[in-house]
Image (cartoon, rainbow, N blue to C red; front, side, top):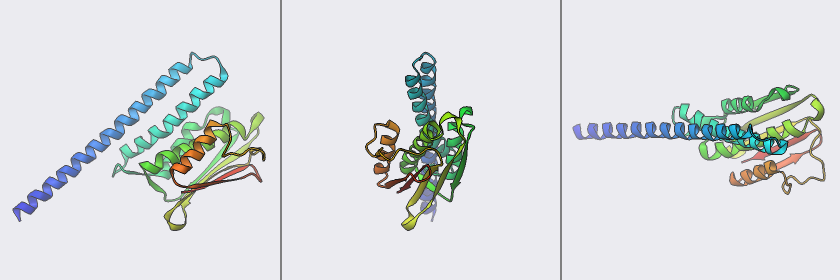
Length: 211
């Protein structure tokens, strides 16, 4: 019995040490990404070309979306999965700028928990689609709405819908073959998640992703 108790204590100590190590790893990754984001911000202050400046800002947003995953994992109880409802809200708060006050955001994420292998690509997908809607769906300051919906779908897959009531993507544009880096990234990340993506253009733009 004493030997069994000793083994159990050793196992508990081992688990505790691994949890401490995982927590430290997520903390360091988050801090390193924040440093990279800060460096990009400092560099962007010396850029006068508008397109180059936007590219730097978009890169910062992408890095922040990944850093936020590691921050959530660092603060979680098991260091392996995160509550996506809280994550999406924080992500949108980071993306929303004063110049987008004309656009309302609706978020409905129900009981979705993800590990890091799905959370990072999914977070980047939401980042790209929302950023794209902010930039292109509501020209000349027109008012509008972006909706983000996520829930557990059939056979435990995840359904993600990002839609807006803006001007929509032109019918002649094939989002799977576009030159837009953001949409190229989205289609690549959906493949990484072994999922499917579809777009509707009847009233604005609606991306439906299942993975």
